[in-house]
Image 1 (cartoon, rainbow, N blue to C red):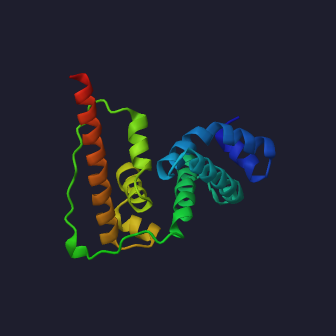
Image 2 (tube, one colour):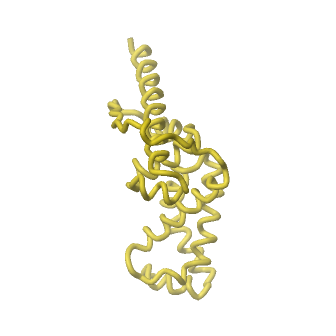
Image 3 (tube, rainbow, N blue to C red):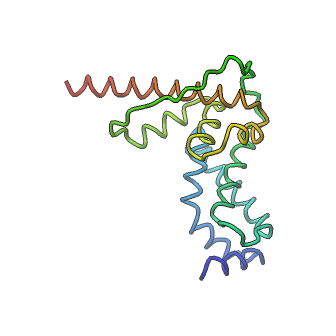
Length: 180
């Protein structure tokens, strides 16, 4: 069944079509949820909540643009919504921010290690890092999504990069010591 027909059937609340749509997209959307979650279980919960929202709002999809992109935005917003209630963003003076790009040398770092260290970041840093570095949002867009200032977004990104760099360097040092 073509995806457009499947979407139309889902808009008619057809359960078999909803199940089929879930099986087509659940792994791709789970990977999005996993980026924003603290752990696997939390990502599963976010994915479940996202699909509930997708099926509730599927009539709002007007076949303009990417359906997968539309669903991805719902997953991201569902994940962010779970954290918006938590008062965890640092409010800082924008004049204190020095925006630097942290370069991390990629020496065949395992993907599971990278995912683990991103998930270990405090919420405020993980969300901003993922939105900016992985999903291409601007600081202005992040500020609007998370109800923070541009400066707070920049500061949280800089801190996330610093933490990640330190963890990668520690991992690389440990790996180098083992190979000696």
